[in-house]
Amino acid sequence: MKTLGAIVALLLYSTFLWTPLGAQEAGAFVTGIEDLPLMDGLVEDRAAGLVFDKPEGRIVEAYAYGAVSASVVRAFYGATLVQLGWQPAGDGLYQRDDEALRITSSGADNALTVQFSLSPN
Image 1 (cartoon, rainbow, N blue to C red):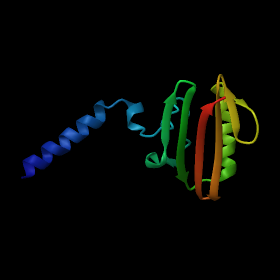
Image 2: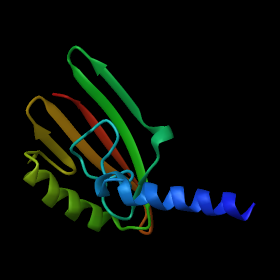
Image 3: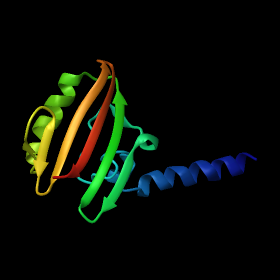
């Protein structure tokens, strides 16, 4: 029995060593928006999201929550999205190419829910 436990531990350890570093960072990007990073401190609620592709463009609704403040979320995405080619177009609204991205938050600081809504322009 001890041998089986040692084998399992060895397999898990070797799998960890051979896994690419990026693959170990589960949830690094928002589901359905492949180049939208998920801010540290947020955890995506994948069961609540929606991804829908249609001829006019894609529609994505994604939700994340965490013990963060709304001002930190706004500052992070305000700086990050511009670097990714998104242009500010209003409070929490960004545009790039033929798509619009709206980021809103609800709840209290340290118990925040963030909604990401992507739609065609």
